[in-house]
Length: 163
Image (cartoon, rainbow, N blue to C red; front, top):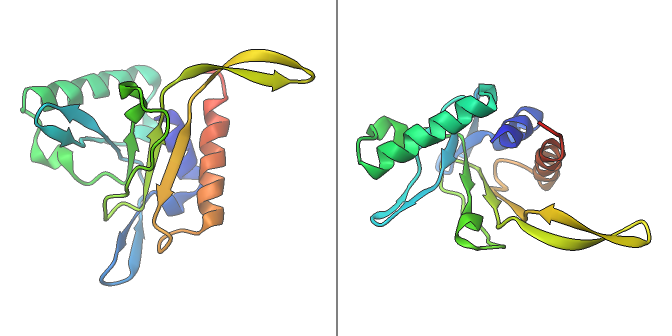
């Protein structure tokens, strides 16, 4: 979530909504991440508000609160809309790769695959590295391929930064 906030501040074109009828986009001053929560009754996507302003402890507490509210169905309907970009953590269910679908009016979704330990060639030798596939799906009407690539690069650079 920290990396998504960094990526959206670096490339604000993907922290946006797009109106297909008016063919107009709206960029947001904040990063409200929709977090996919799977339940027996289907998928819920509550919004983690101002995710780019939260520290690690605040993010964990907010996710715990949102998940609990979804599970006991006490979450206000206002928390299930208005997110500016979304995150699908399909990797928690053993999925390594996927192509998440953008749900309008958002223009981008980040997909996180299953974390694994992979053998990687490094400077003439091999090492075992923790790796997690990351995908980015975006609406070309709202952003260019270059913007998407820069957003993904900023996200990956932030993920590589020690906390």
